[in-house]
Length: 286
Image (tube, rainbow, N blue to C red; front, side, top):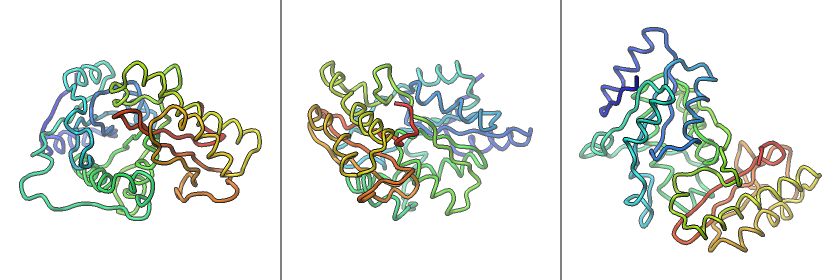
């Protein structure tokens, strides 16, 4: 049975009770509108040793910038809870906004260097909102294993760094991207795309596949790898925010020759929808 709680105190007490019975708690933070990508994270926490799983559902206003899609972001709590029940999730945490950010809230958590480029440059307040809300979730849940999808690759690295730097009792997992049959990364924002945009959206994975194939064939020139990733996106998307080859752990942009562990990060716009994707060259399945 899946219980739904709405207040941090109730979540903390429930997780403490689970640990008191020798359970290891898994946490999957989400903004709801759950799909198979989210649900794969439930399985990932179990594979990492969690015996009880919490899924949080909270559309976090502080990680949306001015003019972004906070108001239209899909909210499907009843459906989300039912999907969690089907997957044997123990707790769904669905707090109200004023429960997460009470009147007078003024404390934030920031990770500096890892947030400076890419998403951080294009969405300047985004990561402060993410790191603050996830810190609150980690505090309420307590010691746990927390799973994040690598579609938001930079976010995963930021949260891994935050937990390590602040000695949080949380194991932060980065889990493989779950893709649609045509290769498009699963995302709650895919539902914004009309039929024509949905077809064009596959250009982002086509570019990643081209760069990955070249890398596997021995190509290491960064400019060439980025050009291969960029060409289909430039042809079908309306605007590109960035396409860059970076170090897989440091997220530092590569120059000249790519190393043995690199990621291509992509963000681009189709109409009013912004999509992100990435590939760890020579390692990910695309």
